[in-house]
Length: 205
Image (spheres, rainbow, N blue to C red):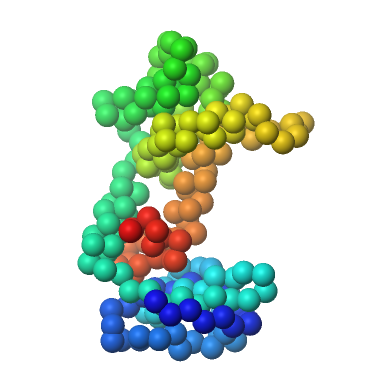
């Protein structure tokens, strides 16, 4: 993996199998000519081979090629993105219950449709209506966060750090929106076979 630092625009592009483009060969000025180059995965589809990240006025150009295992994991992840939350599926119901008890281990849940869900930051009595385009994986992400980083999860849920604001975000819905935002930023729902940005690669390790 080679790294070059350049002043100029940023671009996010796909790695391609060697020896197609073994080095980053795209001038930094190219990003200024096309607004799609600045952090947009659409540039990936042009078959380029580097990822550029802006850091403190400089741009870090990193060339990466996916291994077959990473390609496999990426495709598996993209498949998961297409699974929408289905309130009629038993496994989806159980995941929702698991989120409740990971969040409130000592509080009984009266039902999958209940005013209790508002305590967690869902918009209404039925949390299934809040997943929308983020799909089932947004619930999986919240559940993973609640189980794996329970202290941080509880601090954010209960807003224990920082100054309280007059207008505050609904915690659960914000978590769903973060998943959706990442999906959009990395173009994970694209039908193209081209790969995503640098931030994906740690996920694929």
